[in-house]
Image (cartoon, rainbow, N blue to C red; front, side, top):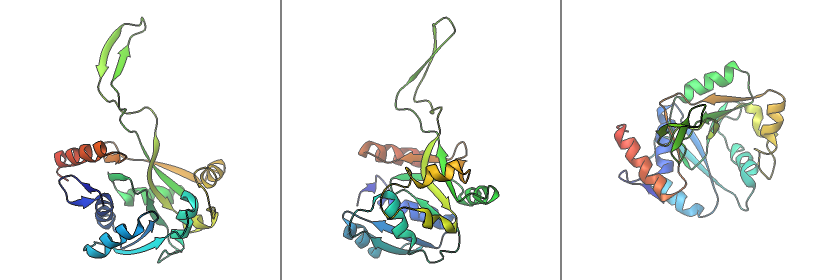
Length: 209
């Protein structure tokens, strides 16, 4: 398991701590490649929530894998959260759940404005450069990898394949897909590389997390 530098804990450990802080009591963890490594860590660690692991015997795709995991929810008649395994964030899931309920959505995605990996240049109407901005936030919102789903959502997922190419577009056309902007100042980062791990550790240390 790859640990966050300086914490001694892998990403999933930090995610479980966050979920527990937000009132979550039961978590289903979907495992694929090297499932035994993750299962060993989960069994050997004192966890703040009850964890059930499910292992895909063969790759089902993101949508199929989510459907497979949803079949093991302890309370399938209630709304549920989901999160990607490669993000590290802190914001109010309770506020997101309220947002989801107020819009009577079937699915709600958290939305983030990630910082660009490049510096930006500002110009005036005459093409003169007026300022340089280091790693500014994107002007576009992206899927932040955290979700709230209503009980009926699992039935809409494909047995195999990617729900972001099938289920989500279908719900969007029917106005049953909502987007919850992560509040300004809340922490969010995708962890894709070793550099991301180091930078996330520094950022959260600075925030006292």
